[in-house]
Image: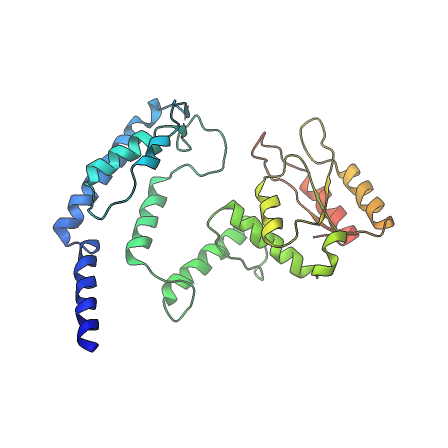
Length: 271
């Protein structure tokens, strides 16, 4: 049994060896990728912000996976035609939304180094430098937005996960339990990003009462309508719990009156 296991391990090691190429092998796959990226960036000023194609990238489904590797040139050609071709080009100057990001080159290089070195920042013991760096970024971000020295935070992969974390924090901070969900009220608007509804569902809060507060002529939440709705819900025996305001909506860039909303939330004990 031991001999059979050793043979099997040796075979697996041999099969996995192409995943760890030497310097020449790394250059063979890296250089075409870098060249592809450079061509993309050079052509970016002329590329459309959105490109409509007849197949909408459907042909990528027919490529499939195989045991033998494809050449990097073949893979890049597939990406160019079926992935980078159709749809939205978020790196384009013609894309006016702030989500997703703008494809910053320096950030891409940072991601590259992070992926290659593969440091684990989840535990201080495993990579104290990476953990310290993360803390430093969080501290700097808190300073930029004016939070006190006592503020803390975490780095998320994007806005959707960030909203999920925020809603979980709000749930725990206000003590919303399973028995409270059907009475707990969430206040939002038609401009609220759809990830909020997804986050509520993931957290088991989809049965919360949702109040869509009216907007003003600039698509901003109306504080007077919010206050009136909170007072009405409290009189009806519901539990006003959470206000979701937008600091620049993805549809029209609307900025809700955050100070007025914060005062109302504090007055009525909402998160």
